[in-house]
Length: 246
Image (tube, rainbow, N blue to C red):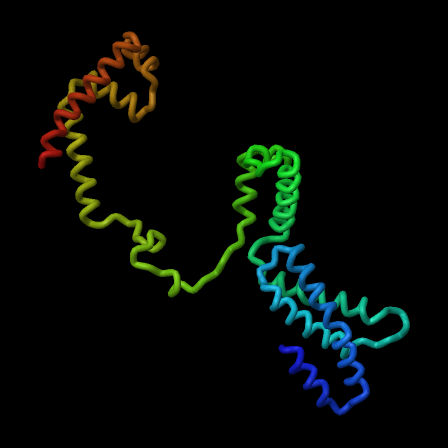
Protein backbone atom coordinates (compact mmCIF):
# COMPACT_ATOMS: atom_id res chain seq x y z
CA UNK A 1 0.00 0.00 0.00
CA UNK A 2 1.27 3.46 -0.87
CA UNK A 3 2.61 5.38 2.15
CA UNK A 4 0.75 8.57 1.18
CA UNK A 5 -2.56 6.71 0.94
CA UNK A 6 -1.93 5.04 4.28
CA UNK A 7 -1.14 8.39 5.92
CA UNK A 8 -4.35 9.87 4.48
CA UNK A 9 -6.22 6.94 5.95
CA UNK A 10 -4.66 7.57 9.33
CA UNK A 11 -5.48 11.24 9.07
CA UNK A 12 -9.13 10.31 8.70
CA UNK A 13 -9.03 8.49 12.05
CA UNK A 14 -11.30 9.81 14.83
CA UNK A 15 -8.25 10.19 17.12
CA UNK A 16 -6.45 13.29 15.82
CA UNK A 17 -3.66 13.61 18.36
CA UNK A 18 -2.14 10.10 17.96
CA UNK A 19 -2.54 10.36 14.17
CA UNK A 20 -0.67 13.64 13.98
CA UNK A 21 2.06 12.12 16.12
CA UNK A 22 2.15 9.05 13.85
CA UNK A 23 2.35 11.18 10.74
CA UNK A 24 5.21 13.15 12.22
CA UNK A 25 7.10 9.97 13.06
CA UNK A 26 6.65 8.70 9.51
CA UNK A 27 7.81 11.98 8.03
CA UNK A 28 10.89 12.14 10.29
CA UNK A 29 11.99 8.57 9.55
CA UNK A 30 11.31 8.27 5.81
CA UNK A 31 15.07 8.39 5.14
CA UNK A 32 15.54 5.43 7.51
CA UNK A 33 13.45 3.22 5.21
CA UNK A 34 15.58 4.02 2.16
CA UNK A 35 18.82 3.33 4.04
CA UNK A 36 17.57 -0.04 5.30
CA UNK A 37 16.28 -0.95 1.82
CA UNK A 38 19.67 -0.25 0.23
CA UNK A 39 21.45 -2.25 2.92
CA UNK A 40 19.13 -5.24 2.60
CA UNK A 41 19.23 -5.11 -1.20
CA UNK A 42 23.05 -5.16 -1.36
CA UNK A 43 23.75 -7.62 1.49
CA UNK A 44 21.18 -10.28 0.61
CA UNK A 45 20.45 -12.17 -2.60
CA UNK A 46 17.45 -9.95 -3.30
CA UNK A 47 14.90 -11.00 -5.89
CA UNK A 48 12.81 -7.91 -5.19
CA UNK A 49 13.60 -4.49 -6.76
CA UNK A 50 14.85 -1.89 -4.32
CA UNK A 51 11.82 0.32 -5.07
CA UNK A 52 9.50 -2.46 -3.87
CA UNK A 53 11.61 -2.92 -0.74
CA UNK A 54 11.19 0.79 -0.01
CA UNK A 55 7.42 0.45 -0.44
CA UNK A 56 7.33 -2.54 1.92
CA UNK A 57 9.43 -0.57 4.40
CA UNK A 58 7.11 2.44 4.21
CA UNK A 59 4.12 0.29 5.10
CA UNK A 60 6.04 -1.24 8.02
CA UNK A 61 7.08 2.27 9.16
CA UNK A 62 3.44 3.43 9.22
CA UNK A 63 2.41 0.36 11.18
CA UNK A 64 5.29 1.00 13.58
CA UNK A 65 4.17 4.60 14.10
CA UNK A 66 0.63 3.41 14.84
CA UNK A 67 1.64 0.74 17.37
CA UNK A 68 4.61 2.42 19.08
CA UNK A 69 4.11 3.28 22.72
CA UNK A 70 6.79 5.39 24.36
CA UNK A 71 7.45 3.83 27.75
CA UNK A 72 10.91 5.32 28.04
CA UNK A 73 12.64 1.97 27.46
CA UNK A 74 13.30 2.20 23.71
CA UNK A 75 13.48 4.92 21.08
CA UNK A 76 11.14 4.85 18.12
CA UNK A 77 14.11 4.70 15.73
CA UNK A 78 15.26 1.39 17.24
CA UNK A 79 11.73 0.00 17.17
CA UNK A 80 11.09 1.11 13.58
CA UNK A 81 14.46 -0.21 12.42
CA UNK A 82 13.58 -3.72 13.62
CA UNK A 83 10.06 -3.63 12.19
CA UNK A 84 11.06 -2.22 8.80
CA UNK A 85 14.02 -4.53 8.30
CA UNK A 86 11.98 -7.52 9.49
CA UNK A 87 9.20 -6.74 7.02
CA UNK A 88 11.67 -6.57 4.12
CA UNK A 89 13.38 -9.83 5.08
CA UNK A 90 10.04 -11.62 5.55
CA UNK A 91 8.99 -10.58 2.04
CA UNK A 92 12.32 -11.74 0.63
CA UNK A 93 11.89 -15.12 2.30
CA UNK A 94 8.41 -15.50 0.83
CA UNK A 95 9.74 -14.91 -2.69
CA UNK A 96 13.02 -16.79 -2.23
CA UNK A 97 13.73 -19.48 -4.84
CA UNK A 98 16.87 -20.92 -3.23
CA UNK A 99 17.49 -22.29 0.27
CA UNK A 100 19.22 -20.51 3.13
CA UNK A 101 22.14 -22.91 2.83
CA UNK A 102 22.51 -21.96 -0.84
CA UNK A 103 22.43 -18.26 0.10
CA UNK A 104 25.12 -18.85 2.72
CA UNK A 105 27.21 -20.76 0.21
CA UNK A 106 26.77 -17.97 -2.34
CA UNK A 107 28.13 -15.41 0.14
CA UNK A 108 31.04 -17.75 0.97
CA UNK A 109 31.95 -18.16 -2.70
CA UNK A 110 31.60 -14.43 -3.36
CA UNK A 111 34.06 -13.69 -0.56
CA UNK A 112 36.45 -16.39 -1.80
CA UNK A 113 36.35 -14.94 -5.31
CA UNK A 114 36.99 -11.45 -3.96
CA UNK A 115 39.99 -12.70 -1.95
CA UNK A 116 41.45 -14.58 -4.91
CA UNK A 117 40.94 -11.62 -7.23
CA UNK A 118 43.12 -9.59 -4.89
CA UNK A 119 45.82 -12.21 -4.38
CA UNK A 120 46.03 -13.45 -7.99
CA UNK A 121 45.38 -10.16 -9.74
CA UNK A 122 42.87 -11.90 -12.02
CA UNK A 123 39.65 -13.88 -11.88
CA UNK A 124 40.24 -17.38 -10.41
CA UNK A 125 39.33 -20.55 -12.28
CA UNK A 126 37.11 -23.22 -10.76
CA UNK A 127 40.07 -25.35 -9.61
CA UNK A 128 41.50 -22.41 -7.66
CA UNK A 129 38.08 -21.58 -6.25
CA UNK A 130 37.47 -25.18 -5.16
CA UNK A 131 40.89 -25.37 -3.51
CA UNK A 132 40.32 -22.06 -1.70
CA UNK A 133 37.04 -23.25 -0.15
CA UNK A 134 38.46 -26.74 0.60
CA UNK A 135 36.20 -28.61 -1.80
CA UNK A 136 36.75 -31.10 -4.58
CA UNK A 137 36.15 -29.68 -8.04
CA UNK A 138 33.18 -31.98 -8.58
CA UNK A 139 31.58 -30.96 -5.28
CA UNK A 140 32.24 -27.30 -6.11
CA UNK A 141 30.42 -27.65 -9.45
CA UNK A 142 27.45 -29.29 -7.70
CA UNK A 143 27.37 -26.45 -5.17
CA UNK A 144 27.43 -23.84 -7.94
CA UNK A 145 24.49 -25.57 -9.64
CA UNK A 146 22.49 -25.71 -6.39
CA UNK A 147 22.98 -21.96 -5.92
CA UNK A 148 21.09 -21.12 -9.09
CA UNK A 149 17.69 -19.66 -8.37
CA UNK A 150 14.58 -21.33 -9.72
CA UNK A 151 12.48 -19.10 -11.91
CA UNK A 152 8.81 -19.57 -12.67
CA UNK A 153 7.15 -18.49 -15.87
CA UNK A 154 3.90 -19.11 -17.70
CA UNK A 155 3.94 -22.15 -19.96
CA UNK A 156 2.03 -20.11 -22.54
CA UNK A 157 4.96 -17.67 -22.69
CA UNK A 158 7.55 -20.46 -22.82
CA UNK A 159 5.97 -22.96 -25.22
CA UNK A 160 7.28 -23.16 -28.75
CA UNK A 161 6.72 -25.80 -31.43
CA UNK A 162 10.42 -25.59 -32.31
CA UNK A 163 11.73 -25.86 -28.72
CA UNK A 164 13.49 -29.10 -27.79
CA UNK A 165 12.03 -28.78 -24.24
CA UNK A 166 8.61 -29.73 -25.58
CA UNK A 167 9.73 -32.30 -28.15
CA UNK A 168 8.24 -35.77 -27.91
CA UNK A 169 11.05 -38.13 -26.89
CA UNK A 170 9.09 -41.26 -27.85
CA UNK A 171 10.03 -42.94 -31.10
CA UNK A 172 7.61 -42.63 -33.99
CA UNK A 173 6.23 -45.63 -35.86
CA UNK A 174 8.66 -45.13 -38.76
CA UNK A 175 11.63 -44.99 -36.37
CA UNK A 176 10.52 -48.17 -34.63
CA UNK A 177 10.18 -50.00 -37.96
CA UNK A 178 13.57 -48.76 -39.20
CA UNK A 179 15.21 -49.78 -35.93
CA UNK A 180 13.70 -53.22 -36.13
CA UNK A 181 14.86 -53.62 -39.74
CA UNK A 182 18.40 -52.55 -38.82
CA UNK A 183 18.60 -55.04 -35.97
CA UNK A 184 17.37 -57.84 -38.20
CA UNK A 185 19.89 -56.87 -40.89
CA UNK A 186 22.81 -56.79 -38.43
CA UNK A 187 21.78 -60.15 -36.95
CA UNK A 188 21.58 -61.69 -40.44
CA UNK A 189 24.96 -60.19 -41.43
CA UNK A 190 26.62 -61.56 -38.28
CA UNK A 191 25.10 -65.01 -38.88
CA UNK A 192 26.92 -65.16 -42.24
CA UNK A 193 30.34 -64.77 -40.55
CA UNK A 194 32.51 -67.76 -39.55
CA UNK A 195 31.84 -69.05 -36.03
CA UNK A 196 35.18 -67.83 -34.69
CA UNK A 197 34.59 -64.27 -35.94
CA UNK A 198 31.07 -64.28 -34.47
CA UNK A 199 32.46 -65.37 -31.09
CA UNK A 200 35.18 -62.71 -31.12
CA UNK A 201 32.64 -59.99 -31.84
CA UNK A 202 30.38 -61.32 -29.07
CA UNK A 203 33.20 -61.37 -26.51
CA UNK A 204 34.57 -57.96 -27.51
CA UNK A 205 31.43 -55.84 -28.03
CA UNK A 206 28.85 -57.58 -25.81
CA UNK A 207 30.83 -59.19 -23.00
CA UNK A 208 33.39 -56.31 -23.09
CA UNK A 209 36.42 -58.59 -22.85
CA UNK A 210 39.82 -57.21 -23.76
CA UNK A 211 41.81 -58.54 -26.71
CA UNK A 212 44.24 -60.11 -24.27
CA UNK A 213 41.44 -61.96 -22.45
CA UNK A 214 39.95 -63.20 -25.72
CA UNK A 215 43.40 -64.39 -26.83
CA UNK A 216 43.68 -66.51 -23.66
CA UNK A 217 40.26 -68.05 -24.37
CA UNK A 218 41.32 -69.07 -27.89
CA UNK A 219 44.92 -69.85 -26.92
CA UNK A 220 46.36 -67.35 -29.42
CA UNK A 221 48.15 -64.02 -29.21
CA UNK A 222 46.50 -60.65 -28.76
CA UNK A 223 47.69 -59.61 -32.22
CA UNK A 224 45.96 -62.63 -33.78
CA UNK A 225 42.65 -61.72 -32.06
CA UNK A 226 43.04 -58.20 -33.40
CA UNK A 227 43.36 -59.62 -36.93
CA UNK A 228 40.27 -61.79 -36.46
CA UNK A 229 38.25 -58.83 -35.16
CA UNK A 230 39.33 -56.69 -38.09
CA UNK A 231 38.36 -59.42 -40.57
CA UNK A 232 34.99 -59.86 -38.81
CA UNK A 233 34.20 -56.17 -39.04
CA UNK A 234 35.17 -56.06 -42.69
CA UNK A 235 32.95 -59.05 -43.42
CA UNK A 236 30.12 -57.42 -41.49
CA UNK A 237 30.43 -54.25 -43.60
CA UNK A 238 30.26 -56.29 -46.79
CA UNK A 239 27.18 -58.20 -45.60
CA UNK A 240 25.44 -54.95 -44.59
CA UNK A 241 26.19 -53.17 -47.88
CA UNK A 242 23.09 -54.64 -49.49
CA UNK A 243 20.95 -53.38 -46.62
CA UNK A 244 22.43 -49.91 -46.94
CA UNK A 245 21.80 -49.89 -50.69
CA UNK A 246 18.16 -50.82 -50.09
